Image (cartoon, rainbow, N blue to C red):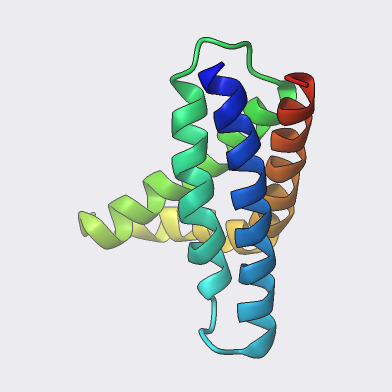
Length: 120
């Protein structure tokens, strides 16, 4: 019952945040803010779902494989100030994510929708 309620609210919240991220980015209010406006709530949602006992979908697993290295790289480069040689490699991951993370954001919301509908 708790996961059903979470899935419903999570889907609608993630969808609203995605729309807000696109609007914010298209207005040019905060350059690059889309990645954080959408990415942080999705990452929190991803972690909450990871701790749930329900079986994970293929899309959820793919999302995790592609997004977790981005957050780990960001933490290491910005938060922990790793050695410059390592930072260069991690920056390649972050640059690649600039291209695929918006697509992954939409895929994550679609997966949330499928999860939400599966509880009806």
